[in-house]
Amino acid sequence: MPDNKLKELERIIKDTGPMAILFSGGVDSSLLAVVARKVLVKDYICILLDSPLIPRSAVNSARKIADENSLEFHVLNFNPLKYQDILNNSKDRCYHCKKKIINTARKYASTLGFTIVADGTNVSDTHTLRPGLAACREEGIFHPFVSAGISKADIRQIARQEKYDFWDLPSSACLASRIPYGEMLDRGKLGKVEQGEDILHRRGFLQCRMRLHDGGTLARIEVPAEQIPKIVLKKDELVRQLKTTGITHVCLDLKGYRSGSMDET
Image 1 (cartoon, rainbow, N blue to C red):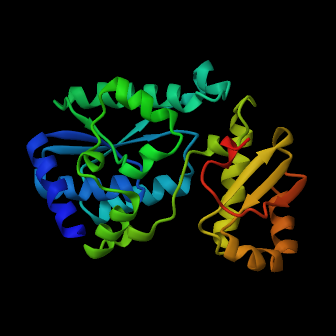
Image 2 (image 1 turned 180 degrees about the vertical axis):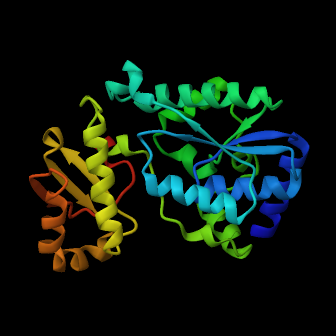
């Protein structure tokens, strides 16, 4: 099954032709990029929009993946915090942000002769709440994985089968997704999240989220349910380190890690 889906993906990319890929360095866009390089050779580029919403570790990881896989990699600086409809952090923040990301990337891609912009959206993404997908539809973003019927699990399986080191990268999301809707975004809060999650990563909690509440003074930590006993054993050290970021209270979410928990009511 993975072989058939990979062949179908390659066919779709070949038939589509030259494309610019919105690249984050996650497993989805990384697999799309390496397949595009294989099929299109030089008729593709990868574009990463570097912004305050992306951890430095993620940018460095993306550069590493691009270098290791000889990808045609371009980095653009992007400041979403200058736009009020993103700064306000309403429930449609992701929609507005995605619109501006797409427009920025498309303008740059067009200067290099690319008219098609693609991303790593897959079938699994279409089953969850993702306001950014509406922006993609309106802007005509091409989703090769969706066209090939490929899910998130398929992507990991294909990447592992093809022996790409990034196959087991933990899922990621922009730092703004850790801050409650309606609470203004600023670099201070985003920096706290980045520092806090970096502390958790260094302690072995690679798939985690640190959600901020109460104006950025309270941290709600999510780790996979099976890792809750482990984090409890390290609680004193972690609380001490997390408080160095300016957080005053640290809580552990007993429901465990789950994507999009800020959307829960």
